[in-house]
Every structure is written in structure tokens, then in C-alpha cells.
Length: 228
Ligand SMILES: [Ca+2]
Image (cartoon, rainbow, N blue to C red; front, side, top):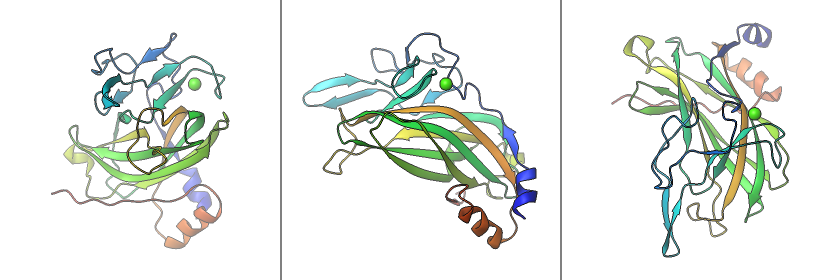
């Protein structure tokens, strides 16, 4: 079963998944904190970049950086206090419960906590809401090393392509402060690169899923949500 599953893997096009489209350092936000629409091809912040802390205002500081630190190529960097970045693809949901694998590189650039937590999500969208169909938090040390991670998801017949649902991906730096509260200034900067999304086909038998997990292809996290 695992072999037939692999044979059906199909790349879902991601715009600028390697973050090489920008040739200079480019923030996701304007100096006002408003979203810098279109500044980074393919990717959009999920909210504005204005944060109040310590009696002052901090403008969002996530964006695209040239080769530096842990990554020898141009990449995205996400600050712990900024919102997620996301991309809707034009690929419709399957309508037949297909599994998806989101693979990406991530590394710890700097963290006051000495660790980093990154939330990666595969979602279905009808153009307005983004409903997670799979997500996972990957954690790593502040050691300036890029590693590859995978998160799995499965769309369901809750998200029929005939209703306009397509697939998308989202990343957020969710590193918490040492007291476990919300991300704040100085939490961390995390590098993201090499985003690849694949449709892995249907997996009819639970035993196959167990084999995949044992095979180290990544943790399976399927979140099913009902439309209201
Ligand atoms: Ca890159």
C-alpha cells in the first residue's frame, strides 16, 4: 500500500515556495504595520504587524532575507510576535479524502528562549475562511541549522471542490516566552524555506497510515472540521 501511495504523489504548485523571488531584504509589513500587499510574491501575512509591548509600539519584523545565518539561500524569517503567513493555492480540494504532505525547511536564527516552535498548517479555503485540515508544531534548538520537516493533513467531503474549496498552507512562529505566555518581543526569529506541498492520494486502510508513520515520513495530524 505504501508503494502505491507514493506513486500517486502529486506536487501542488506553490508560488515562490523557495522564497527566491525577492532580491533585496523585504519586510511583510509597511512601517505603519499595515500589510505590504504584494511585496512578497505568493505570501500574505494573516494580520497586521503592529504590537504594543513595554509601553511602546513595535512594527512587524518578519519578511524575506538574503542568504544569511542558517540558510545559504534567500528565505523567509518569522518573528515570534508576528502573525502567520499563508498562501491559497489554486488547486481544488479532492472531494475524495486525499492526504496531503507539507514539507519545508526551518531553522533557528535567534531566540531568547534558545528554542523555536513553528506551527505549520494545511488548510482548505473557500476564499474567505481558512479551515485547518492538518497541522503540526515543529520544535528545534537555536543552533542555526536548517532541517526538513513534514506535516500531514487530509481534506474531507466537508470541503467539496464544487463548492469552491482549494488547498492552502500557513506558517507561524509560535515560540512562547519563558513564562509560557503569548509570543512577545524578543521571543525568536525562525527561518522558513523550500515549501513543497504534495497530494499523496487516498489511504483507505488505517494500517497503511501506521506503516507510513513507522516509516518516518512524518507525523499524521488530521483535523476534521464541519462547516456550519
Ligand atoms: Ca530559498
